[in-house]
Length: 289
Image (spheres, rainbow, N blue to C red):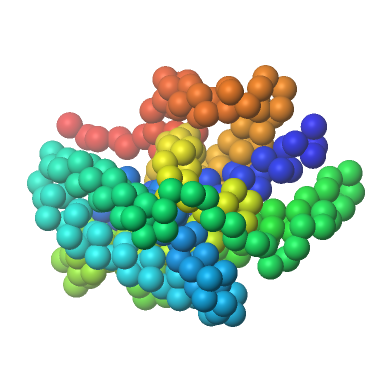
């Protein structure tokens, strides 16, 4: 059981990385990027092209990939979200980001084809024993990357000027604007960070699942489930929910059958929202009337 749970937590770390992107954009702009899965796919495909096909050094290929996907996230926010997110009830950004996801998926099929592409792990395939648990080096890298990302995000939000600006906009957008913080720039930054996390997730997961134009669809559904279960406004909750989701999903697939894996997340969303509409770690807003 420990082996199954540990392997599942590696997958859960990918869900958590993508879900963190959902959380960052939600708390700062009250919008979500439903093309997040396709940005994960874009990170994987660019990684294959730069590292495998063109032979670039891994670190250079990874850095360029994350930068390009982050830039794509900023462009997406300016063109597909900002124009449709004005007003209290504006929801045009939902359809807009869904349309972008479909367009990116079809564009990827035109450029890279429909076949899955191999992305060899630079760490090899020899399992590493950690007590009773044996994990592939790539799985350990995924788990370690989540720890580094969470620590880096925490430091960025608490110590940097732009990080504090993100926190200020998340707490009170109007007050932050009156204090001189540009909400438009903060929104673009939030989407850039969210996209960078998606690009990193694509690079990390590609050696495990291969890279394909359709890989983002299932991943974004599960990551959105993690974000909702953990609480969209809670970064800590998203990380905990991601790890737990991956572990339980692996146990469901192992003991009930892989055919139950994909419906598990949707059923869990319904169950959690029925009890905690704001997620397990979310906080209900108190409105005075």
